Image (cartoon, rainbow over all chains, first blue to last red; front, top):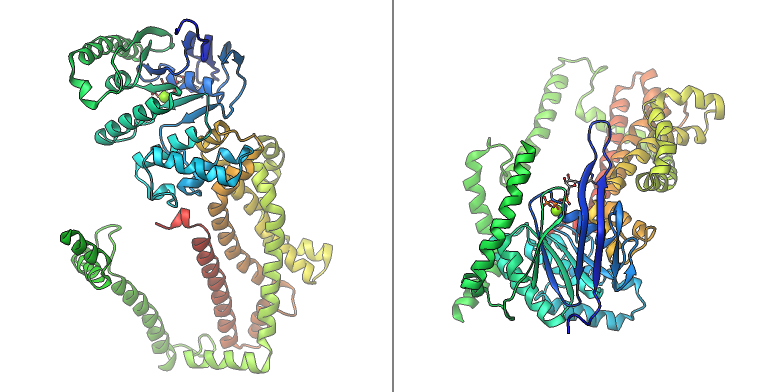
Length: 267
Length: 290
Ligand SMILES: Nc1ncnc2c1ncn2[C@@H]1O[C@H](COP(=O)(O)OP(=O)(O)OP(=O)(O)O)[C@@H](O)[C@H]1O
Ligand SMILES: [Mg+2]
């Protein structure tokens, strides 16, 4: 069945060179990267620090321009950012002058949606990320985990074709991070959005994904593409099951090689 | 159930809360010299008041004992007397009015022109590249040095005073606003783009609201400077205003009037500052409030 459906997102031989200057050489951040994502897939990208994960995601979001190569969404070539690709940043991307509900509505304002319907959408997503009672709070009155939940709700409220997340839980403590992973998975199981999620946490990448894409150290290239065959829904206890641990061992080994390479290069 | 109710009572009971505050205050008060540590509010106010009392005590000691010639420094009571005669016999209130008018007129014109320009400079590099060199250069030329030139060009009327305030405020205002606007975090702009806003749309929906509290703080600072420019302008060539009164009083050796005039400016500047400060705090709860 999967073979018959069309890809949601196609990244075709994308290369990115950051131009240097007098004091700094050019940086080849991405080298001939190819990746195809099918509808409803949850892909995590795993890679050592500085390998170009963010760069790849920002190119998909349209916030960065690739040097060569193309990106297609539903067969359409992409140029620049648009609301069909929702983005969640690592931290502090909420609009501090807007309340929680105003933040979530921000993207809806540019669309032709009536006030009543808008209210309904906001209510739905507040409920989805479990923030009832915090509608009138400003971002600075929220904990880091709550802020990220608002950011996710804000991106989803726009009903994007694909949800892009760049280490969205990277700044959170371990307990909160675990809860957020469960919440995000729950949301995905309900909404079946296509998700592209970046992380450098091996456990996180397995727990969330149905495919883990491993990148090489700089210049970033796809090193491995590993389907995760764990059933849904996934309770957090799945993290200690033998199958999960086997994936963990395999991916840890892959990522270790790359991290070592990256370290050697710096020396 | 009962326990929960009790906790709520404790949380919402003002007396308990205030006691708790005092309690922690006294404990902390043992470390007055610990860097940046808070001290109890009452102690703070007490120290502040005692500093003012001390000032008046030293002043009284110097003047009433005759240690200092009254021509140099009159007693506090004499100063109050000069103040009263200034208001009752010399129409000092008109001088205050005209000085306030000049400051506000010059300042507001600077804001009306400088604010949009600063915002555009901070947002678009093309605008910045065009105006930056010019404005940066003029900014370091003190406004008071322009006074003779302005008198030559436009005479000694109101326009000249307002122009000096304008020049003193405008250039710094533009540059400071441009920096403030340029510092809006990139993530906020990028988030707005991925939420469907256009390149120009983010100017109104992100850049302006994000930088508004900072801009208001800049205006507050610059209004403070405007008070010192107006006195210079009025000292040089003016028949009215607080500055001209100070100069006249000097010619007539009325030290009390000079000091009262200076104090009046201090009070005016302080008042405008406090009013703006309160307005800013009230207007941006998301920035200052908890
Ligand atoms: N704007 C830029 N100008 C120049 N070089 C850049 C720029 N952005 C990224 N780079 C370089 O490109 C490489 C990839 O950066 P990127 O941020 O994509 O890495 P990453 O995989 O997201 O790392 P991390 O896990 O630390 O977030 C790095 O070597 C970085 O120094
Ligand atoms: Mg990154």
